Image 1 (tube, rainbow, N blue to C red):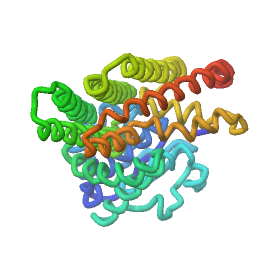
Image 2 (cartoon, rainbow, N blue to C red):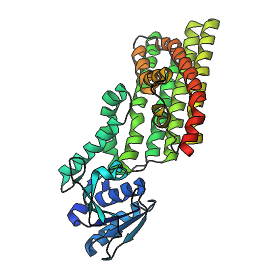
Image 3 (cartoon, rainbow, N blue to C red):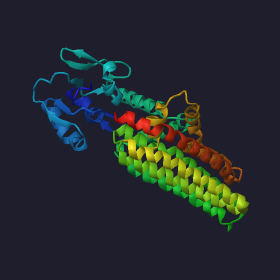
Length: 377
């Protein structure tokens, strides 16, 4: 059972002024412990350290869920985490504390390693940021997201964290980029421009959609680096992603219809949006009823990945999920844009989304009730 209390001991003013991803070491450790479920955090600081805490850190941790108090020389409660203020820890170090901590008398102290270490200088701060980045990449699904998108977005995120910008502002900014991509595709469909201009609009629309896909990770990464992850932020990110995707599909569908015409194109577009609506409805239904997260990724991690691997439909769905992800769609749209026929991807998208929708509906009906009962028992 996870201990409910922790004690953070001072390590000197020099280490207190060091920052990891824009957060003071002590500030970050308080937030990590709080988010991991620690109920009470006591601070054992010198007078100088206490002054630094009150002046520079206290204002940034007012939203911490844990009770925070100064110890004033009192002995820590039994079965508490006892850590120095300049240790680098991540949330999984606390929730999986049996691996990362050892008993020393009646309390728990860190087992220092390459994953959990003392931060003494700026080079240690950069090492810690690299560890967080590696953890984010490791827990990101999809080859394109890991090997391409994250390699671009994480350096951008690390540049933004010192500004303490709220991740939700980045979500809105990225949504604007996505909306601009749809705007240029609508321009291409208007037929009021020269062939050269129409081609440029297609390429620009495809590029901005791909840029939005890459930058889509920035808000979530900044939230993880600065420990500002929230369900509201997850829902806003979900709304932004899906609004961008839907409008881009709408603009490309209109472009597809203006170029191809006829009932077949209308039927293709109808299949596309029917499949998308059913697929998103299946996922959102789970999130609203059974998840604490507002992110679509939670459906995969909390539900799909916990279903029996012996079920071939589940196995197929887990493999197919990479095809239906935005980063896969975006790179195809981007590449097709250079052909001058970006709208050709609409029939392929219609087939993929309809197949995904049917599979998710079957899986939800097959497992959702049993899964919910097991979760609530």
